[in-house]
Length: 299
Image (cartoon, rainbow, N blue to C red):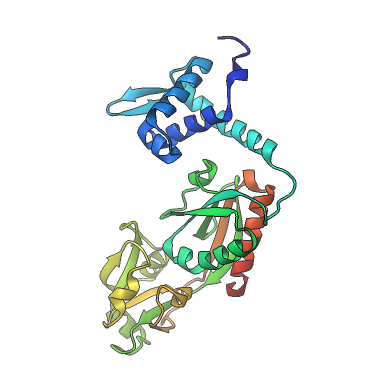
């Protein structure tokens, strides 16, 4: 291998390599990249030739990275960040900008926060486009791997490379259909009622549920759902109740009545998160500013 082989490297090859590593599959990487498997394989072959390493080897029905590939991962990410910085100008003009952002959030924050953000963006930066990704966990790797550029989550993470800013604070209330029942205003009425609860992805309880359990309060859970969006339809026309964030009353739970809980729960802070690579990027700074402004009336 020539000592000048590094001059044959390009950002596309490093990007394809990282996506294959993240997906653990050439076919899934090709689907994510919007290209063919042969194009991904050809690009990997080029990188193999330059590095002198197989990069990925067969393991059962899948592939696994070699030790050389594992050593290359962080170097490739750092190199791509450096290349990205070369193309970033010091100015950002919303009126002429063309850029695509991915935002990861759950359906509660998606439905409450993003419509206002996108309305503002479309009026000021019509060339920006977006993809919204579901997030059932605070999976910070999707920020580190640049699979999304912003994440909206409850509670701040502990990570030195992830930057955070609080967007708003919410509190929990009890939702019910006033045409079918009275408000569960006492602890006895609340605990004896049948509840609808949300377990994200079908198995992860909300932090609020753990807090209630830790208080020694045992609710009568009739139904668990994998997301927030369907709760309204199961409560409306019944005597079921649900304990959820108060801001859901703006859209997801519109038409139901609310009552304060017969005990105190900690407030819930909602944060936006981003990787440090975008801290000084003008377009990203602009988007963060607009997002914070769109939430300021609810903070």
